[in-house]
Length: 460
Ligand SMILES: *Cc1c(COP(=O)(O)O)cnc(C)c1O
Image (cartoon, rainbow, N blue to C red; front, side, top):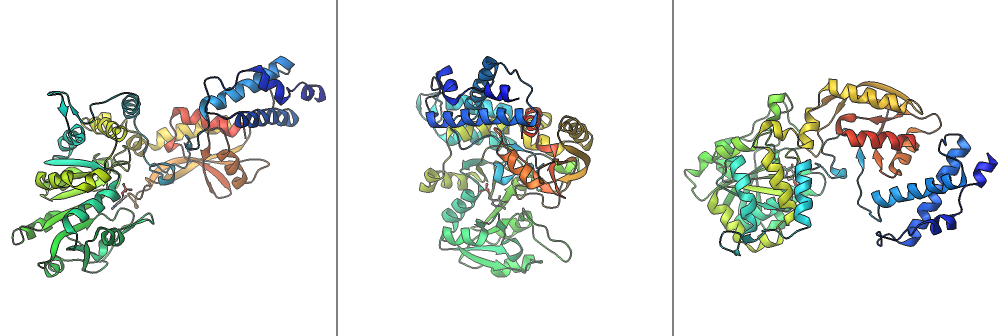
C-alpha cells in the first residue's frame, strides 16, 4: 500500500505533463492546480479505503490524474452556472431552472446563438422587419388568438398590460384571486408598481357577477382574472369565469377583460387524468381581450411571458416604449419557436421534457428505479417503494403523480452529509432528504442523468 501511495505523481509532475491552458485559456492556472490536487487526493483516499481499482504503475497513475482533470476541464470549465441532476422528481423545479428544453429547441438555440439571424430583417423585401413576426404566427396558430407577442416572463407581461391599459385607472380583481406566486410576485404589489389602482371585489371564497357589476365605475379600465396557480379552494366557493365576464362588455364597451393564466398549458393534461389546468385555446375562444402565461412552466419552453389576444390591443402593446424594455432575444425566440412547433402534433409534444416527465407511468418509473437501485447497491442500502412526485413551478398544487422512489442510505454517512457530498460532485446531484434517507425520484432523470447520477453516487 505504501508503495502504491508513493507512486502517486507530485502536483508539479502533473502540471508539467500537459499544456493545461491550451484551448481552455479561460480556466485560470490556479484552478487547474487545485483540481490536480483534488484528483490526487481522491485517488489517495480511494487507495486507502480499498476502493481504487485502476492501474498502480507510476505512468498509469499519472494518466489517471491527467484524465480526471481533463474531464473536469471539458465538463466544468470555470463556470458557475452548471448542469445539475434533478433527482427530486419535481418536474418544474423553480430553483433548478424550471422546464428544460427539448432537444429540438436546444439545437435551434445553439444555431441561432452562433450565427446571424433574420431577427429583425424581412427576407422578402430586404428591409427592416419585426422580431414579433417570427413568433406571432406560431402562437396564433396554436392558441387561435388574433395576435400575440412575447416578453421576458409572465410577471413582465402582467406589469406591461396593467401599465399600458390601466395606469391611473381601476382594475377590478376578485379577493379570491389576489395571489402571491413564489414570494416575489404578488398581484397587489405588481399592480401598485404599474400605477393601476386595485379595486377588490367579492370575498376570499365567493365572488358573484353582481360583485363585479357593483365594482364597475367610470374609472374602471379592466377586470383582471388571476389563475390561482399554486393553491386550490374547496367547499363553499364561487367564482366567475372570464367567459362570463365578457357579457359585461355589452354595457361597457371600453372595458377590458384580461386573464393571467399563470402556467400556459397547451397540452391536454386532463385527458391523461392529470389535474384540471385551464387550457389556453378555450380561454381565447371565450372572447376574452387578453391573456398571458409563462413559457417555462407547463408549456415546457424557455423563460418568457406570452401575451395573446385581440389584434388592436396587441398592436398598442407592440408600439409602446415598454415593449423595448421587456423584449426577448433571439435565443429565447428560437427556443420558443421550436417548442411551439412541437404542439402541432400531440405525439411530438410529448417529447417536450416537461410533458414527457409528467406523463411517465408508474411501470416505467419502477423499471428505472429498480435499475438505479441495482447499480447503487454495491455501495449503499437501497429500498424501492411507491411514492409521489410533484409538477412544481407553482402549478397543479393538487396533483400528486404516482412514482417509485429509491431510498438510499450510506453505511458511514448521514443522509444530509450524503446529500451534501452529492452536491459537491463534478455534476452535482440534488436529492430530497426524507425519512432518514436520501430519496431519488427517477421521474426527472433521463438516460444520461441516470448514468451520471450513478457515477456521482459511486464516487462519493
Ligand atoms: C407563475 C405565475 C406568474 C409569474 O410568471 P413568471 O413567468 O414566473 O414571471 C404570474 N402569475 C401567475 C398566476 C403565475 O402562476
